Image (tube, rainbow, N blue to C red; front, side, top):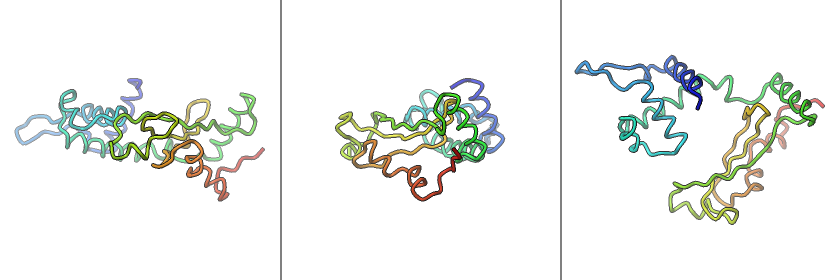
Length: 188
């Protein structure tokens, strides 16, 4: 992650939740820094590392790492939901259609793709429901719609079971919205 982006998120999270402000304990010693707490949360989200592993590298205990993750996720949603974690508005749709037009795809809102991620830490009991013939190893399927600028305005993880691109699309809220007539209206 770019350092400027990391620092911007850190500042936003600190202003949203005072959990990320440094505190002094009963002995007068300063507690964990906001940087340690956010780094722990980002490492767990980005790399899937267990909370108890972070003690060795970041000097943060397992329960504090989990608490930091919960506060971080709540803060990110609270701060960025209105701008980034939402459906496209009519202005966004006009911008997406303009991007598609410029690239020779009039009427295209974005590019839909289903990615198969190898789930190396899949619990043994779940191997059967997350393994298919495509890869032969447990995978998670992520369906996304992204614009040219990589704005991901739709994401959906496939459910357990016979996960392939067709079943993920069958269960996708994006296509449910199209069928039910609540998808973004595109004027061609």
